[in-house]
Amino acid sequence: MAPPETGLTRVSILPGLRLAVLAVSLVIALILGSAQSHAQIEEEATAPGQAVAVEPVARDEAIERRIGRILRATGWYRDVRISVDEGIVFLDGIAGSQDQRVWARDLAARTEGTVAVVNRIEVREEVKWDFAPAFSEIEALARKIAVSLPLIVLAVLILPFAWWLSSAIALLARRLLAQRVEQDFLRDVIARAIAIPILLLGVYLVLQVAGLTGLAVSLLGGAGVIGIVIGFAFRDIAENFLASLLLSIRRPFSQGDVIGVADFEGVVQTMNTRSTILLTLEGNHVQIPNATVFKSTIVNYTAGPARRVTAEVGIGYDTSIGETQKLIVDVLRDHDAILNEPPPMVLVDALGSATVNLKAHFWIDGRTLSPNKVRSSALRLIKRALVDNGVPMPDEAREVIFPQGLPVVVMDRSETSTPSATQAPAVDANAGRSAEVESGTESTSAEGGLGSEISELPQEMADADIPEAASENLLSKR
Image 1 (cartoon, one colour):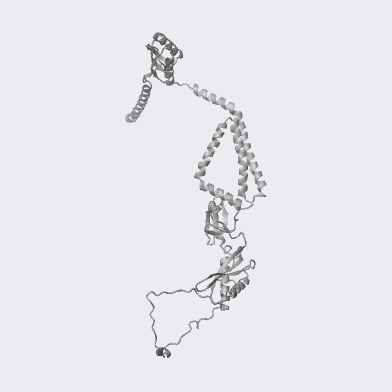
Image 2 (cartoon, one colour):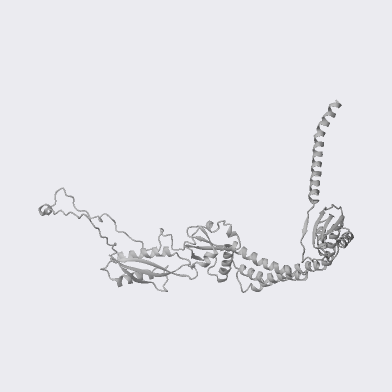
């Protein structure tokens, strides 16, 4: 069984050997091709840099010997061959680099008596397995590190000290501002504004000691440009942040106030660096960007406890306006939810087509009472008093137009004088209707009391889980 195994091994090895030989041949071909490309003779002719004299300044043999001795003295060139004919220098040989080839051309061009130079020196770069340059660079780097070691130690000491000093100053600023600034957010912003320059001063000192002042200036300039770019990119975010800062300073509302802003009304739940969150009477949480809040008109219904409410009612033209006004004022004064100061008043608003329109103005405690519920209660009691005193409240007159005309049928008097036996007697439409009794209580079960709707909102709505509400509340006080 041994021979078959040997045959299989040879069959499997041969393709591998062929691939290895092919790869080596390809590498050799690439190396030779690269060497040939580098070894190509580039004939370069240099024109004279000045006027050519009619009589030669130096003989061709002297020029040839002088240039040859100099090139051989450098040791950079091999197989140097120099020929001069009528002041034109022809350079042949092999150089180790392109810089050496150019140097030989410049030398021949500057030699006295040279008219022009034809440079035909080949460039053959040799691969030298010499690690001396690398060791030299490492040694130079080590020397630089050794020289800069004291500066590095100083920087290591200055930066932590600057950080500690800035933190201590920020903490001291917060304590000093605790009695003067109520908002945590404002205290933090002011403290950081004081502490950050201390840290920047430490960084500048490190760069100054290290001799990198130019780098410091470049960093400051770059930071300014980057700040402008970031400002344009995050303009809305920066605008909302600045608006939150200004709102925290001006304090147009507090947490729990009922405000109206940007067509929304509700209770202020929280305010972060981006938006203000309201809980509306419908139980919805509305997030309004702080920039919009700052730019819009803010109506704070909770800032002052007294809130004026208006109720409208229309009476007939044949009714005494003065007596009706006194009657309505008496109803409003007897209402426990309506404040006596400022006193309620009833004014004539307009003369309508069928009624004299009156407006009753009165004040309530807007923090605890609902304006809508108190208005409903007041209108209900005013209507009851007007009905009890026989004050008519007619409907608006309406004009009906018949474009085609209205036919009129004239009945015979003999037919209408005696009612028919089968004619049903007229029945009063209101005969079977019991007299309506209006409730005299200030609040009915349908009105649900006179308390504010805000206090009646379910606690689950106020405690709803809102991601942005979990962030720092800028309206909180320490």
